Image 1 (cartoon, rainbow over the protein chains, first blue to last red):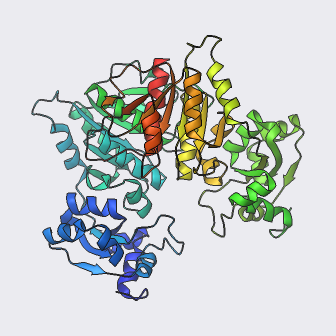
Image 2 (image 1 turned 60 degrees about the vertical axis):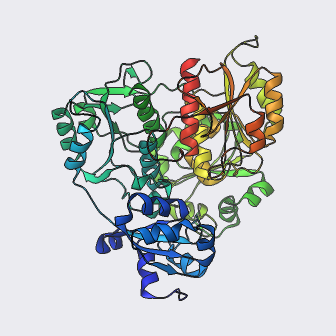
Image 3 (image 1 turned 90 degrees about the vertical axis):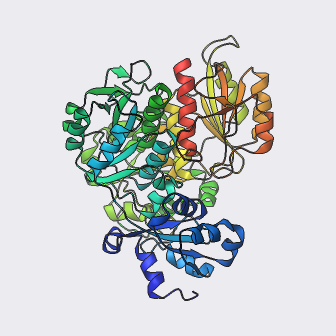
Length: 276
Length: 276
């Protein structure tokens, strides 16, 4: 493929937008690391693989990985790759280094995801489990970093509440550094219902709040825990804050008023990881 | 001011670029939170304050803060504000909510910054101190989040090594959420020299590396410590890794290969904070 104006190029480029992703039920994956994670961990999601000649030489494993899952490789020029990552008219700031894939959006209902997470680690209800839920998360980079951190800390699932950014946005996919294909997640989750279902499964719900009196570093954390992270600017919704079992603050020393959302989530998730 | 094409608007807009910032010795500060931190913490850096009528009504404290430091307020229209945040032709994604300031770039030599940090907390060489240095940090958002996290964790200073992104870039300034005006930092720092000077001041240098055998969560951290964070893609340079006193890994549980740089820094900085 050499024409930057073909229907196929237009379709891949259109996946920058939420409505096109919804219409086609697909999303775009950019760059060697993310595409490799897709092929290795979720090969059944992949629908197309576009490689420049240079990228094919740089990453010989893609030919084998694609063959293993029966995915044809479409050779493209560097110009086609550039045309495919146009972010709503604007040029993407991160180069996909000659590698782009498309993948099906395959979603698991959030309750099924919770049930799987709640049971992970053993049959008994007392087995450790960490999950994280985000309330109206707005920044695509934060969403991606949250998935990456959840993966790295061994969390069982991530729940994006109603009104959160779409985790399939290109910037989010890039920020996950491949973890989108490792850690199970659900979107458009009604968080009040999630809290109810957590309680039924003996998972303690813990709100993070700058106003809480309990410090993350000095409290006895339960081993079955659901961390609730608030919106970047306004924090966690009042209803969720009221309903959560615990309210926990990260002790701040300087003159900063708060932490970046993904940073706060990392401190909570790794605090749980070290206690498991 | 109502014209979006005046020289003054062009100058403020030009500060999106590194060369214009260098030429004028100034940078741009956007949004109520960051501008408030500038006026409160570094009022002597401020050179101009642009406010829409709506923003002046929403934030009456700006009038008082500006008067206290003798800074005149320039009333502008919303269109002028929009014209001022054009990021090299592209529109900024974050709205400055009717509030923009410009500020002088006032730099402290890195050795002076280190000397101040090394002595902070008491006269004795054994007093606790945490600093952080970033090697060829590339993402402006990461640079901002690093400053914000350093502030919140009570770190004494941040050092951006040679080849790092410019901390005065608009996206970095936004990501700091005001912490740029709280935590002392230096840029273009020769990190090999910084390590030598740390050693002279009995500050242990600790490299973060995925290949290290020592875990962050199980090792005995020194109370005088300089954290060295590597480049987003390539990690810490081999020379720095060799020269550092310690090499420490953050234990990863999932299939993630690594953490986001600012996330890794947060875990290290708060680990030091809880031990101080």
